[in-house]
Length: 95
Length: 484
Image 1 (cartoon, chains in turn blue, cyan):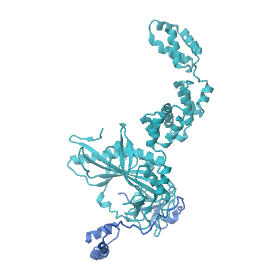
Image 2 (image 1 turned 135 degrees about the vertical axis):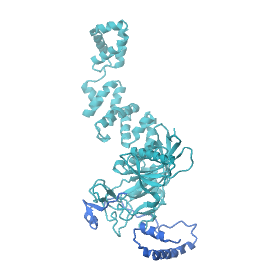
Image 3 (image 1 turned 120 degrees about the horizontal axis):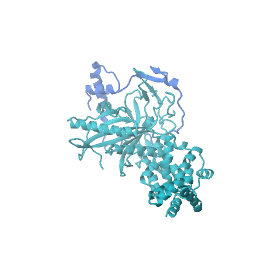
Image 4 (image 1 turned 120 degrees about the vertical axis):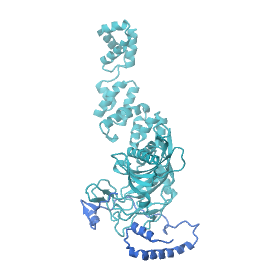
């Protein structure tokens, strides 16, 4: 799969990465190099193999339903660039 | 009767599917130990996991899995013993990780089916496509500051079940009936409180239209976060009409996301689908696949309670209720239990009449919930018995009910203390009848001269003279005899 400059822009937008126009070409090449390297995997025929999502076997380690956390509001808000009335404050986001 | 929208030129049909987000009832969040309590101070119930702090790892809450499986069983659905968590990537202030942990290709619950009952007495099966579990996002508050949005993460990470239906709805009524039925089922199961106005049950509707008889489906619009059954029905109807108008003017519909405006009842444009929905799902690396076994599922089956459909059928058979009465009485488990306690050992049909009549009227008038009622199920059963045994008349029973409501005393005690027992002693009633006839010679003469419609008046006078305690049929009988 070859990536073009538009795809680079699109992926950058979705990942909120700023890529200068001057860097588009080189980013595209790096992208394609990585993809080509990964492409080697498709040389193996996996048509009869179920995807392996995880190497963990058996049951998930799950926790009991107990309240063990929270009430650390000051710490939660400590690194917020902006906070008001105990809320995180962000530039207005109304779609 | 099929629902269609007729215009001057055409007859149109609605095609609609629903996605319902139900907050799972659990003490703590789905991936963290913070509380799920609603209405606490902002950001109190937040852990570093919910706040998306670097290096924090999610740990699955057993109860959320349990609740989802129970809900799946309640919707007659396939439980998947293998399911996988996925990351749904998007940037928004309500989601500090930049992704939501959800399930995508492998949801925990697969296909199911829910029967809905329609206003015309017919029923219809609605297909459930799937249920997956995921984390809720934070709550954004937009109206406190003109330039800023405030974010409260108390809701972030609360467990959700997203229930997706097939596009089986052909009318707003069907969608409304489904939402009510679903709400009733999750409340019976205790897996979601179903409060749409508090946002613990939220509905998105996908709506498209097509000409009657047309095959296939046209482009659809998805209407987000409609927060009541009534609004959902209104949104579906108005969105269908909007699309029809566009088609009839020669336009086309693009797949899009719309928002319901409560003040106008209309939907308004939010965004085009293709632009916003590039979620780049991939399997969640921080959580292994979720494996369940038969024993686990069987154990949850054993916990299943009698659900509204089964209860309704049983009430019809066991107590001789009409389907309509049984439907109302089984909509909530609390009402059904109340009825059943009142009806057991008594005349169920009459008990139902009292509950659906005077009892509900008083509850509503006093804005009381069932558990605040001064009248207990036992009192209603007893009251019905007193009428059946002829101890009091139906009319007196109404007064007794009012006193029961005020004093919380048992009906027998009220009847005893107030001397309301129906007089069934013929000689006692005869005496009253004689008095009435003797003190109204003019009317008696008029009656005997042929003015026979005065009969009712004599019955009334006798009842009045007995202070309502005389047995009405005996009064009738005696008067007929005396007046010849």
